[in-house]
Image (cartoon, rainbow, N blue to C red; front, side):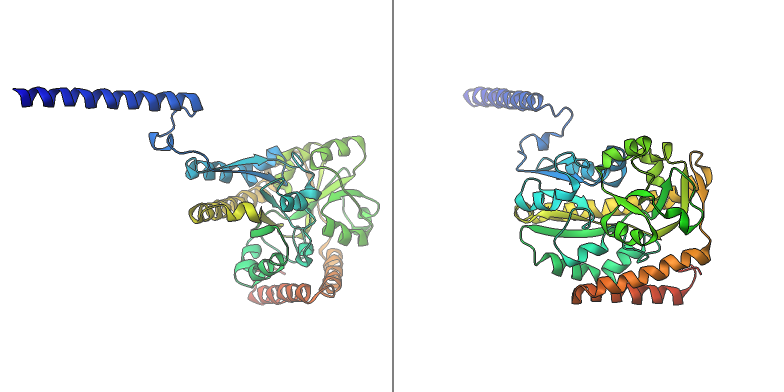
Length: 363
């Protein structure tokens, strides 16, 4: 009887202890506001918190980065949280590299050109004229033709920032307030565009204008801008530019924007290996999503979009623009041996694609 009494009391004590522990855990969950979070995550504390700023405004970020950041935060299970900020929200885009270098922000999604990265290869990011024809050209160039190693080498010479990888976005077309049907129509147009693209387009009389991304639509409405050479038609509809620029030129100066992810080196080194792997996977997820989102959108909106009228410059005349681009390439190649190496890769790659013929290149 004594043994039975002892066991009964022990069981009752164990039950009471378990109940108290469960109540305490429930109270902790309620206090954090993590309603519905799995019990396993409640005992973990967030040890790493990043502030990541993208080049994109809120509407565009919904597609180009937000889904992958949300997926990362969910999979990190409380060990790391990324706070996402939109274009110019914390730091002006042109100052992003320096801010990241100083540790003001932890990571950036942008092109090297726009954030004033102090490397010679920055000129090739964004829209380097006629270097790419399709979005798949970008990963092919980086992972099969050596650009990945060249970018790693270039950023290895810069203190405080780690380049994490590149991906492709949409083509670079003009959307304007008046129709463009011949090259002469470009003369005098005040256009919002990227630094290197602007330098090239100025050869045809375009006047590049630099503005905060969020001010572009109003600048069109007030007459400060005549057009935009910053995206394809998918973004024009997504961010609202199709509402203020009724014309879309089907000719483009680049088939895909080259953008990258960067991180403050000290912040990156504090991330454990399994979370670095997870972040790399989140970048891959973002790159994949954009591939099909833009590819489908560019075709669909040309056919079904009702806000923009399509115009085209005749192929023979547009060929002169591409010929001028190759002169521009020669000028850039002369800037450094590494630039010359990149330009040669572009030449070799595009020559091979042309020889391969359809569907790689159509004449």
